[in-house]
Image (cartoon, rainbow over the protein chains, first blue to last red):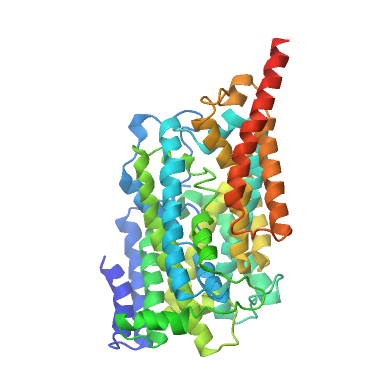
Length: 49
Length: 465
């Protein structure tokens, strides 16, 4: 859930002029990596076929 | 536009869903919310802008059109689904006969292939950002560079192979991707607005009217979109599944017919928020360079959200092309039942890849989606009339099942004549394709009743003789 929060938060901070676009993209990339590494475990994805 | 990102419903194919398998409303809220965040949303939003839509027309048109779409699921699809609890195909087979259903499957499969092709096109635009080859423009119909051909082929074939080998894994993976993709789509809009100079909520509406959706003439090659175009497009873009009844297969699992309201999650996340966000990205691109009218989701997403944006474009295309190809394969398999699921899915994926090479489908997606609904809509009218009115009119419902016919000509002629009339109306310039399905539904309904009166009387006389 933290990864999801960090996915959206940088865009809001960019909107509020608290973050540059480059920083925003960096945070979103980091959040994406964390989400895709952690969510499948959390959601218990199994390769079935 | 959307296809299911969840497992296709394969159980209880030829029997009503039992009470023990019914699902609560939460399942439908999640499913519809997820499946309408598709790669094609990234094309549709910008195409509204290219069609000269104004802010008020777009916002009000989308709100009303989406409400009408939800009402169509709620009042047309779900009540039949929760009473009969059958798949679309089995319901159709009872009414139309097996051979007509095979024809319906063929039409459905071909349309699915083109739709999956558009998703391949969207994903391939993301690859173009990395490899910097020439990508198709707004009015390109054919592939315009070797790089594009290689990229779209590679993306399409990869999707096809994965769909053939591990459909279920991708379907499960899509469930992981959906919450993240929803947030990325919101981020597209928020970042895009800031890039357009909006710094507060109060500044949104003035910017919407003067910078983003300015209205006026459409771009070259595009049809001017008014309020009516937008409302009808939002209503009919999923016509094949609500008025066309394809979602009988989904809602047969609903405990109550009012669960049809769950579709609002998909409409207002995907067909409102996502379309607006995607068109904001396009507005940013036009503001930077008014001559750059290309609708390329990859570069647009990259400018706003960097690599996360690019991955979102690929995911949105991939996770929705996967079930689309799989479902097209299922439709085609009805034609060749002995062929293995793997081979049919792979073959279908190759067809979708070929379609994806041609940017025509993606660049003319508004027209294609309207055509898709128009082609499958008459069978929705057939099911609706057959289910609710045939007994009251003294006609036999589920006629093919009762009479043992393999091809109900009343339903078949209804389908062909309705399509013929609709096509004539569009080609003669009388009615645009975005509107023609509304009169088309009534034409189909009237035709089906009249033809059934003749057909059922003729066959009953023949059997008595």
